[in-house]
Length: 331
Image (cartoon, rainbow, N blue to C red; front, top):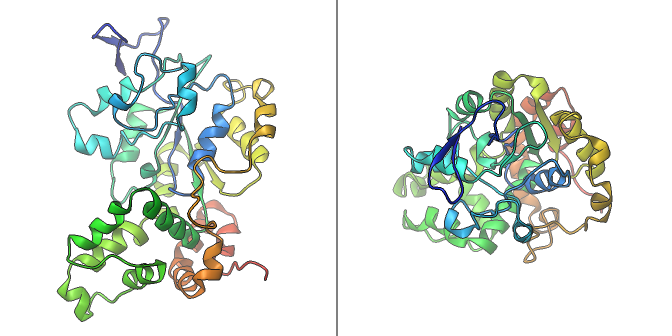
């Protein structure tokens, strides 16, 4: 790793025994809308976890001279897709940009993390695991998973409220009218490629499924590659919605209690943490409302994900993914 010295305009190479700038010790790899913000927040409550809280990938949007200053506390946990999206868009400078965004740590008395949900998508980014292993061979991997059908509904509402153009572009570039609701969106996802509509608008149907359905809910595929590279014991998989104190204890144990001692953790901060998620979408009533408002669509999605849920259950040796196939709230 190299990193520009702040304000000096030159690179500083890591050397043993000197002041060090280390890469992330923890990679939170996804899945999107499955609680990655929560995982990052829980880790940030430990004083030895140094966080660059700038969420934007553009250095111009961050205070680059005060990585760990108190002003960073008003920003969200940093999300940096440097091993995927940024590397793809800037293959010559991405590593330098990555180093610029890291807080100063020595990897022993303090560490940092990188949260990037795209890292679990090894179909679109087939070299991300090998790249991470070559740069960060001793990193601890943390992945969050959740009910894939409800995850899609949450993503749909999230995109509509924060960046509707992200969804609309998949339609307008093929001359298709964007969906008016989740029902139309799901209907488009399940249209037959041989239908007259899909043939006429090719490759609209294929691309829409690729971007919103095929990859984002099939967790086992990406997780298996990370486990093969880092070892299963070095990949912690957390189910969204688990008790946060239990999750915090799992995270500390996974990273290593000599690195993040539990007795130094701010359990008081955790106890005082508001139930309201840091980035809650106020426009809709939460993902569980899909059971009431879109029961047919959830059943269709559940059926689609049955096989991938079984694959995840087999990989983890856990039964909870199978509950997603038939889970329905009590009336």
